[in-house]
Amino acid sequence: MTPGPTNVPERVMRAMLAPIVNHRCEEFSSLFRRIVDKSKTVFETNGDIVVLTASGTGGVEAAVRSVVRSNDSIVVPIFGEFGERLAETITLAGGKVIRVNAPYGSAPEPDAIEAAFEKAGKVKALCTVSNETSTGVRYKWLKEAGEIAAKHGSFFIVDAVTSLGGDEISVDRLGIDVCATASHKCLAAPPGLALLSVSERAKKYAVENPSSTMYFDLAKQFKFAEKAETPYTPSLPLFYALDEALSIILEETLPKRIQRHKTCAEAFYDAFEALDMDGFAQRDLRSNTVTAFKYSNGVDDHKFRKTLEEKFQVHIAGGFGEYKGKLFRVGCMGEVAAYHVLTTVAAVASALMLQNIRCDPALAMSVAEQKLRILDR
Ligand SMILES: Cc1ncc(COP(=O)(O)O)c(C=O)c1O
Image (cartoon, rainbow, N blue to C red; front, side, top):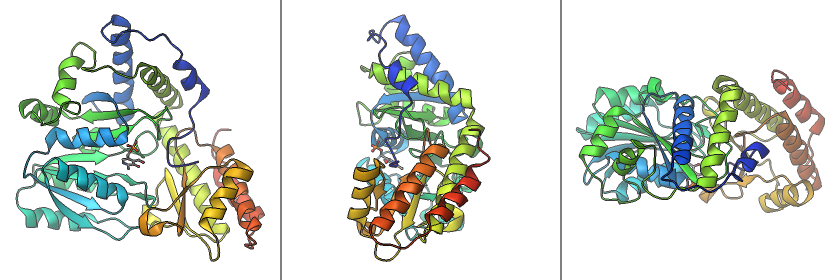
């Protein structure tokens, strides 16, 4: 129940047993084409798809490197650790970051972004995290952000590492030029692959303006994609796994999958509130894929999470930086279903009681159960 890597369905694990073929043969090309076709449905785009053998950080770096060049001004809403990392990635690429900060637990509103654009003059791109994993905040203004970028003729780049496949990231509708995600979050495949969608405009720019990177240069990816190949050796077992994981998404259908994530997240919020723990994120910005909660008085973070792991085999995550010890985060991604929610809520209530914290487990279970009722089970 951590915010990734998430549980991987057995079907996906088994897919990795297929033979290791060479990535310059027809079998690989057909696997490549299948992945690209299915990914387009999941990203809801007609743009290009790139799959890198890399973690999410590699995907975000490739997205940044596709359009950020030396001295470019880049507007970045920053409302958590992954926004900070995005800013650092841009700085390392030579970009000048124009920060739009918001206190952790909230996010900058579109007006603040517009003001940053007005003040900066020429802005090359707007880069944002869509789901801030460190605070459990969902950036609900992606549409408005995309409109601001479009109005100013800027590229729109989104880190959708913990949202794509579990929340609404309709790439073309939102006007996203480059969108990056990773295999081991809402897609429920093992870690090791990063996926990007790239708009026609961003592709043209990347091809005409080579970036100073070898592995993360998208222009090289596009060249080989014409033959349905990757420029460098891909992790073949992970490509097989991703192909199967994408099939599972399409079988469930994207709208149903997104609704399942939302319902499970709501069940977590209601249940933990019933245990006297408040969600960390501003209520209207609560994430559907990573839920974060403040501890009620007297809970020892280390003991609590150790109990969950050792006595109940439930793994959750703690807080980042200054929030270490003050909050905990429960992933709500991929395969997440009523079973995971109810098991986690029961374990959390038990772990609290083992620390002599008074709570009402029956109430927590019943409010969760009520929310989960709408799921097919
Ligand atoms: C929003 C976001 N961006 C980027 C990353 C980095 O991904 P990875 O750890 O796979 O490199 C993460 C990881 O959790 C994330 O949550």
